[in-house]
Image (cartoon, rainbow, N blue to C red):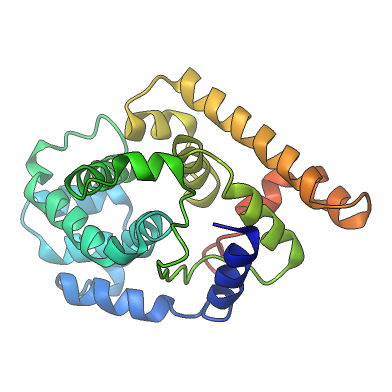
Length: 242
């Protein structure tokens, strides 16, 4: 896929950055809508209540993480994102009794999401193609990255650079910068040592740096990006309350 086609797709998605309401509606329809008090409870409290049979606690967790899981699939397999998101939460519910809290619930959730992704790629005979192309997919695919911000030149350039990362690096970057997960949480999701996660993130930063240098001329934009690369990468996804 050419940089031009990717740029067009990203600009189109930036114009639809307020579509998160639709995602919340899907989440609410999936399980019992949780009351305000349940939504405000922390993950361990909600997980324990869900395991005890409280459907509203499960609803709160789905509402909390549905947009995040949907985004995880949207940047890789947009046509299957909705179906895989639903399958992920169904798998979480079906296997809830096996969750013992050794890792955070978020790590457990994204580990299941990753397994759903790998299963989808294998079953659709696209695993090798996935390794060869960027996570945003081919030009024939449509995506709904409603929670990715691309309304500044800096964001646009970072996304172009992000598309050059290999899939393993992309997932590590997403979980670290967009999901605010620690390296130990990411290691649990990917089932690799923490040191490997650290290495992937370091190499990903190097790729982003080099691609931005390639895409820009010396000047203010390049200086802003390279001077605060972590902050700009993190700002691609709106923070809660922003």
